[in-house]
Amino acid sequence: MAKSSPSSVSSGATASSASPAAVPASYEVALQELEALVASLESGQLPLDRLLMGYQRGAQLLTFCREKLEAVENQIKVLEGTELKPWVQE
Image (tube, rainbow, N blue to C red):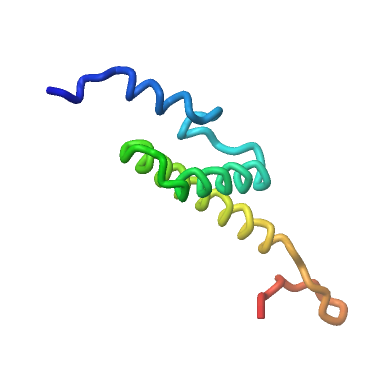
């Protein structure tokens, strides 16, 4: 019953300018948020519940960034002779 402090719940929600479920506007925005999040997590100054929320948000951002990179990778074409072929990473 000692965990009924509403201030600890509300302070976690205001730490980030975006809601945890917000989709980033671009890859660059997501990467910037992810870098700031990692720095915050690595500081060791966050309470356990905020660490968990940060980890979950980081996983969402990482997935978003990977999907964006994969989409761009699939759009890149390489000209072989006179034929356009999908770019294949070597």
